[in-house]
Image (cartoon, rainbow, N blue to C red):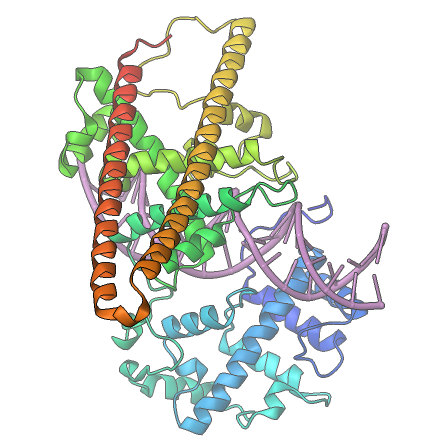
Amino acid sequence: MSASHPKLSYAWNAQELLQLVRAWGDVVSPPRDKKMLLPAERIALHARFSALAGASRRSLSSVSRQHHRLVTAYRLIVEYNARSEEDGGPNWFQLPAAQQHELRRVHGKKEGMTAISEELFEDLARICQSGGGETVATRSPSSEKPSRKAVEKRRRKVPAAMATVQESSGPLEDAEKGETTESPRFKWGQREWLLFVAAWGEAVDDFVDYGNDQREKVKLPNWLIRQRFIALGGSEETTVGSITAKKRCVIQSFHFVRECAAALEARDGSDWFQLAYNERFRLQRKLIGPKSSQRLGCEIDLQMFANIATIIDKEEMLLTVTGGKRKRSRKRAPSVSSESSLAASSPRSPSLEPEELSDLEETPPPPPASPPPPSVSVHGEEDASSQVDEKVIESLLEAQNARFEQLMHDLREERMEERKQNQAMLLEILHQRAPPEDSPQNASYMETLVGKQQEQLMDLFAQMQKERQQEREDYHVLLRQLSTRPRA
DNA sequence: GGCGACTCCGAACGAGTTTC
DNA sequence: GAAACTCGTTCGGAGTCGCC
């Protein structure tokens, strides 16, 4: 944002919205519920709004966007009311807030919608229906609006349980119970977290598999994780925003576990992952801090931990191997995701300067349990050289990983190809030996063939599982060695 | 190339939950 | 009641896309 438009990163208040609607009525030509404004109207709307609001507090793009969200919401309400009038159901403002919220969410997936109060809706209806031109409201049978008092009266009369709407299903139990919670909350359980990690892993794999073109985006998009999450059986209600937050949460928990495991190992050599949930939860206060109460971190088992580590590695590799980072201005405080997520341990903390953040990105979290060692790295030179060493090691590890993944990928492809060829050959020989007229014999032999192949594949799979288990154990040994090694 | 709409997603936020 | 954490929503910066 420019200096003349200082960043105003908080919700539009009711007064601002009313001022926007007023400006809208003043400068926008009918039909006023059109979604697209003419360029001149956009500018005029911003100017008029700025004049009414006293100062140019919102940018042109912000005003345009808010206008767009209001139109979308207004049209949804008008259409909804028209339908419910035909069906004899409750109108929009008689619905519980939770249900309104759900409908807004379902209908405004991409663009989003502003929650419109009844007062604001009436103002909007007034300006949209005046001045001629066909509007959504005039097209619909429900254009005549009852007075606010009447609506209020009716709303009080409507039993909450009659919330019976329609497109929305799912987390609306609250509404059906008559509660008017603003945003129905759904707490994730073990299943959701496991699904999420699996989906995240699949998304990274998918992305690695076809993301080697330099022109491709090199940052894993969160919508891809959401897509995989839903494909694996996760709730379709989960938004990309929610996935973003979940990812941040998992990464934060991963760092938490890493710290705990290392601190515990250093303390008495015991294994964090062998402890029960309650034990972990109790111990974290000694290992991390007296006020620490991470729950998700305590639920993460060794397997999940290893999975997350692999995924984070792969995702970081995407940034280093497949090309440059997506260009982004450094004006904004940088993100908390991935490598810098430790900063998220205090989510409301003020944003870091880019320099501070790049420091954070390069260095591992300071172990809270052990005080910093006596001035080994106080000197700039030593600091710099150790950082360079770390970078070299990091690059080597990443390169090794990348090479290994590539080899595995090629091997998998080759094996699949070979398997197909073998099968084709077997079938061909079979057909030659047993002609089609001899079908019973043919069928029984084929059954045997399928059975044998199943056996072979099961053996192979079991072998791969063993290898995977071995890899985990190796990793665990490495982790132990690392954490018992005295800090430099 | 310029412009506006669309889209993604990080940050901020508020409300709820848990633990002490 | 305080503090830390969880969770979903909203806003808006910035990248992308399509049109002229």
